[in-house]
Image 1: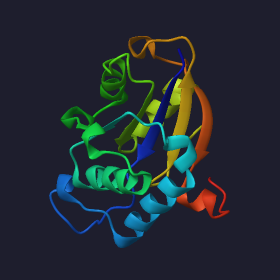
Image 2 (image 1 turned 120 degrees about the vertical axis):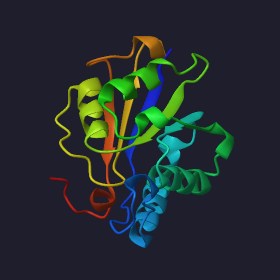
Image 3 (image 1 turned 90 degrees about the vertical axis):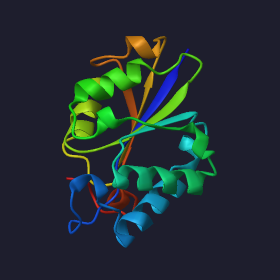
Length: 168
């Protein structure tokens, strides 16, 4: 059975709040999260599980996506291991998704989320801008089997790219 995964880098966060884990989204970040979720609404409609780090900015990004997509916030699962971590922890979280879930989202941080997207798809993604979304599918794999180069990327969008500004 086909699995679909969306990797989302949190939207733009304030740089004036300390400690780092408490940094909220800026007004621009809130707008970007709403814009991206509406832009990708058809593709994101079937999300059954959202994994997010426990930082304020990832939680806020996740909340905006849920509000815009009219998703039940009960599908959100906070994972402290996704904050200030490596792609290995992202993979561990994906590999632990229950098999009855066919579509999931992970909201995380750079540089790990960008490295993880490249690891799974073997695409040249570079540094994902804030609120960028990479979507991929996995054919005939369980979540536990997802690993290096097993994903087929079908979307890579950011707030700038949907406005016609080219990704670097």
